[in-house]
Image (cartoon, rainbow over all chains, first blue to last red; front, top):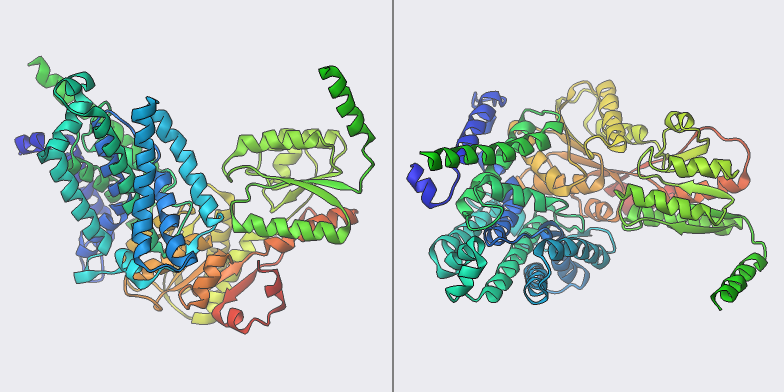
Length: 323
Length: 315
């Protein structure tokens, strides 16, 4: 088991924390009319994944960028930009429904490409470029929407956020599909190996013939694309292109990636680990909601889990290297 | 050369003719239809009262320190009154104290200042004007009871605003208190902060629909969160079974109500707040500490009929 986790770069501590939290929430959650713990119902299981879908997809983007020793602070703002871009095309301009998808994904990928271009061509640190984009994208979203929500998407788009084929919310399918593809690419393709090699040591990556510039450019574009997908799901869920959507979500996304085992300084990253990180945060929020706990504690709990997961990981790896 | 230019500039400034009364109006942000409507009210109020004003705002309703900086610069123009919508109850106090010292009266727009805290800091507020958030929540509860009846029973969810934000707390507690009084059978089973975030409100709604599948109503402390909640109710296949009520009466909410999705929104009338604030400053005299501008419940019937005279103020 530990070997499997090691191969997929999942922190064993993270899995332990997820299971531990789930047990605690199951015990503490209220009981339904039929005598089942609410937390353990199938419906609630999907609720957790549904609630984690938007920042989970952002976290996939964050994992790619961070495991190549980069950072993307603009994820949440680009989500908001993507949300209003798609909605503006089909609601304000009354174009056909699929332009919401093209608009959201296109705006996300374009913002990511701009980040990548300036990082690679301008040699400006990614922290600064994406911090700048955090402001630019949010401002642009407010300008496009005139500061107000763009309400009333066509049914085809609402399907992506609100439908429940076979009783399972559509965003759950989208999250799982995106995560599986992203996992396969990162773990099993040359592109993924180059990403991790680049994060491990840029100079040796270049020496082995990796086109570092192109690789980075693509990573930031993928990150933006993920924000575009998350923005589309957000729009569809709430039937509104919302310029304030995704405020501070970049921090949730980075937290999920780090809890899941991604090394903040690059060289290590796993999409499956990131999904566990996102689920930990989803379980915390869901459990506290079910117990109707006044949720001042949620942020505190997530912060504590972040520190604990990395600390336990340090203890384990250090212990092993001393043996 | 530079000195000459500067001297000329100063001379021009001094030589400017004395204008009508001029008010400094400081808002939170204009990137929000609520403040846009209030700005319109200020403009038309100033026209009606024959006064001038200059209006400034900051980039977001979280930009507290920048707002203090703007406030300080606005005082340099020595307005006849400062009408401010403070981002929180303390940030502008140093600036407003200076305004008092300069003999400029201070008006609290939208009720963001606390008279006691302000008095302790040596700031005298001429009056506060805005919606009564406790009463707005209460109106939501009254309307709910008018739909379900006083002997109705069942679980109710309350979605609060940002954790620790006084406006959201007032609306939520106003709703819960009035509901407990009018229909004790309707039980608030959870009151959780949605942080003004549609997505978060959607998640909370999902969770509570799971723990209480027989949920009868949801009250959200603003329209954005109410819209997140109502879309989630429909996605869960319970559209029409759960009554959803928001607060604000913004344009998205009006569209959703007309489309038959959102059941009601307790509309604030920011246009009227802005207009009355300017007119009352101009009129002068002593005022109560608090001037409450009424709120109204918007429903499909009221919007479709379009005859309510108050609708004129819904911008």
